[in-house]
Structure formats: structure tokens, C-alpha cells
Length: 491
Image (cartoon, helix red, strand yellow):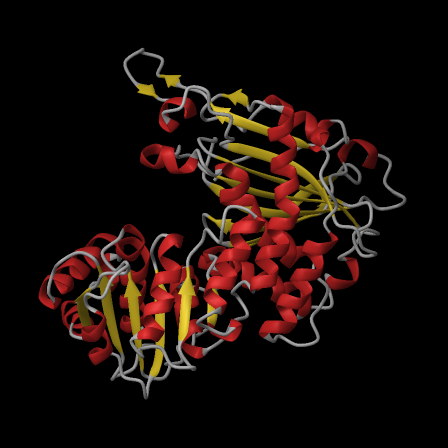
């Protein structure tokens, strides 16, 4: 199988916050990989803009260091790196003032595709949007890319959307969620809607439950004070896990068209039932000392520098979608820091057959499970029952039909583009399918806010859990009382 690389049209991409962490880790290395693959055409230009005082030569040296650190050796070709660096420019800019804007205007070519990546704090979105228009830089065809968080509640999300709408049409705004750029997430839509095998079974009649897990081994570390103002619900559930749930639960759109797909996702969010306190488990990771007593990992309260913090580093919820397709089928969501392994997966567990013809089936039967792995080792795994090899009767055993992209697709599967690479190229193409719409963001907050307000009003405290575990004990009970159990967290 040969992966096709389709070049985009020439463009000018302005990256605000070009000297920041996200640009260093993801944006600049990702753009270089697209250049290396031949997707960025001759005549394209990437313009860094930030408050840091430096010239273009210094910015190119900064980009070279980012490539050396974050791009694999197999793609670090000296000639290609030099060619990529040659299309970079830099302008020191004052996002809140007048400095640098005329210089930026002189660089941006209005006859090409213009895109502006806001890799900055949300407080700067409005000033950047206002100045792009005040200085005549952004045209009616320009596109802006907005990083999360998209507000911290419904009220702030509405203010943010209103601010952006004062300067840009909704068709120009690309709210980026990197989870939607993952190859496996997009393959989920292909598996559902391009194969007759699954879609007839994709409903409450055949699906017992769905689990969505995003587990991390790291703590909040150096961003503890920021994280303590958000927590796992705002940081992960309201956006990343919500998007995964929507792709699982949505109805087939009439066409693979940006608004058609987002219309169906919006219907799912609006169909989410309120979540009761009994269906919510929150936790904070505890400090950990090594067996020899020498090593110490701080707990959440230390990392957050707030000994009385009630912010969760872990959350698990049981969620229901109130529509005909999913009536009665629970969706279990969980995400947390300092867990046993770094993994993200969706597991669709199907119901058992209505009648077993095998004598030993009661003891040996295991459910069919479709597992979509987002990280690590993106791929899909379908667990099925077969006869155990050998004589001596009909003994059943569960086996996986495993499709790792790296193995199934050969070299192409081992070289899957990073989510940011794909999404930035979609911006240049003008394809909003994998980006969130304003009403979708507001609907997600409208569902999330009452949950947060509920535990705040009750004065609930998160339950402590051991670092390196699967989370709080109460999260296990959330499943056990339904006669189910969480899948093991492992790489």
C-alpha cells in the first residue's frame, strides 16, 4: 500500500506564539515533516510572530533546534532542513499594541491562502483578531486556528465566540482539537460508515456498553497552578473525550461534509443526559516514595501548590445518550494523571449471544470487544470467540483480530503523520470537518457546567489514589455495581 501525498496550494501561514512550547514541540517539527514529504509546495512561506525580540536568522536557528529535538533521525536530511528553513520568516510583534504589525502586513501576500495560527493564551485571541483587521492583514478568505481552551465555562465560551465573530466568519474559524487529527479517530468513521459489517450492530440492541479511556503517567508538574484552575473535567472531558464520544454515538451524516458531520456531533451532545452525583468519581494522585526511601514523587496537592485543592486529576463518569440508538447503553468515560500506563482507547463491548449451543459456554464465553487504540501504537483490535485448537471437545477461547497500522500498512503505517500535521494541512485546504464549530463548543459547556456546579455546591473532595494505579477505588465500584469492569490500563 502506497500512501499518497497531495500537495496543498501555496500559502502564507503566520504562527503567533512561534517561540512557545507548542510551536517548538509540534507546529514547527510538524510543518517540517510535511515539507519533507513533499506536501508543502514551492512558494509557501511560514512566518513566526511573537513578543521575543529576534531576527529571522535567529528564528531559523530556533526552528532547527526544534527539528533536531522532535523529528526522527530518518527525516533529518541536511539539504531538506536548509530548504525548509529558507521559507521561514520572523516578526517581533506586540499582540496588545502597535509594534510589528506593519512589518507583518508587508510579509503576508494577500493573493495566496492566508492562515493565522493563534498558539497563544486565550486572552490574546481577541486582540490578535482585532489587529489583523485593523491593519488590513486578514482578508475575507483568511483562516484563523484557535487552540484550546475554548473558555472555562459556557459564559466565557460565548464571550470568546462573540469576540472572534466580530472579526471572522464561522467558516474562517478553525478550533483545533488534536485528538480529531489522530489517524485512528478518522478510521473510526471509516470503520462505521464504509463497512456494512459494524453499522447494523452499532446500537443499544447489540452494544452492551462503551468505555473511553485516556490515561497519562505524568503528573501536572510545572503547570500545577494552571491545571488547578481547570482539572480533568475541563481539561480533558469537555473537549477530547466529548469528541470521541460524539464520533462513537453520532448518526451517519448525509455526506462526509464539514457541517454535515458537525451537525450530527452536535445532536449527540444535546442528547446527553444530566449526570447524577452517584455516577461521578473524582480523584487526586498521592505522593509516592520509592521502596528504598530515596526517591520521592510529589502528590497532586504539592504539584498544584495548594494544600486545600479540590481540583480533580482523575475523573470517571457514567453517561447516557438519550436517543433511540443508544437508549439504555451506558458510556463510561475516564481520564487521569499519574496512572499505570500512557494509553488512549475506545472499547465497544457487544452483548453476548441470546443462546449458547456450547455446554461449557457459561464458563468460557467472553464478550466480543472492538478496541480502537489512539496511543500508543495506533490501531484496532477485535476480540472474538473461536474453538481452542486440539482434540477433546469444543472448548472456546477468546482471540484478537489485531490490526496495528505499523504492521498492517508496512512503512506507511509506521510513518503516520502527527495529528497537528494533518490538521494544519486541512486548514490550508479549507476543510473544517475535524474542527469544532462554535455551537458545538457551547453545547459541550452547557452539559459540563451543571456537573461542575453540582460537586462544587456539595463540597465534594476528590478521593486520593496511588500513583501508578488505575485510579480511585470508587471508580472500580462505578462499574462493578453494573456487573461490569474497566479494561486494564496498559500500554
